Length: 358
Image (cartoon, rainbow, N blue to C red; front, side, top):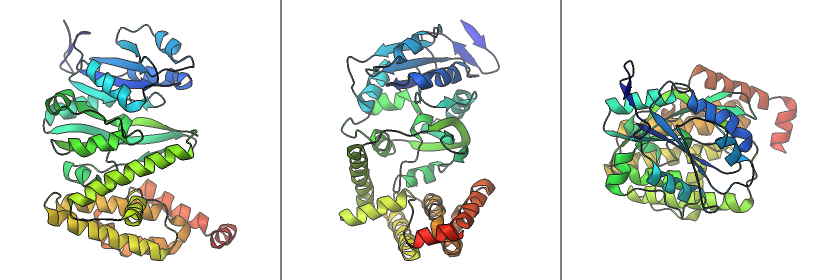
């Protein structure tokens, strides 16, 4: 059996340490970038498990064009959808760790090595994600999620704490507790799973952009958006109930709006959002399920994202952010801070102000 001394890895095609799990559906145009990014990993002890979910394009032919024994191609009997396809992949996976990957993204060469090294040294962490670098239809930018188990868990109260294609999961955790994706959550299957996994282990993110996530126009129908919103509202309501907050449909929708950091329509709405976030912090800490530190970081990032995306409100949004105690718990990096200031200035141009007030 071959050994790579500098990594301490045993390479055995029958028992890889990592299974890279990648569902594919009509992704022929992207696989030429995605698959090589996996095959070029510095970490060698992996298998790439590709599950084709009934593609009607040349996806299967593209995958078969790679003569690499680490690639396993399996085909669904039909189009099962993401959740059932992932569950099928979890059953087939042979790795100690399972790394998710989307067919239109690209992995940094050190992605698997960084995550395996961290999980090996931190056995209490069951799921590990990372930041992402967006590319495609916009200027490349790094998007962040909270780091540290307390903050990642607290983020569940506002939004999903992971970028799904970045996660690496301990297979033993899934097997020990019978954890799988819930196929009734057709658009939020990942967020729903993390919500349950958090009861059994700690979660964390690496503060590195280990995956480049493609941003491109998608054919998202009104029905799809409606299903995603409905399922997210159900999950958020579940989390709020656990900390003793009962919400009606309108309140749940506002919480969703705030948690995703969506654009506010006025400074009055911004101040209402700040008061709501502070109420969530108090209830969460009082429940004993979340720590003050974790809530502070998660809420601070939520507050910044909301203010950043409301740059259409002009300099007043900067003053609202800066004057709030919530701004003390999250310090944006220079790049995102100056991009925000530039966006505020852009919205202050005469033509933009006129359209915003119309």
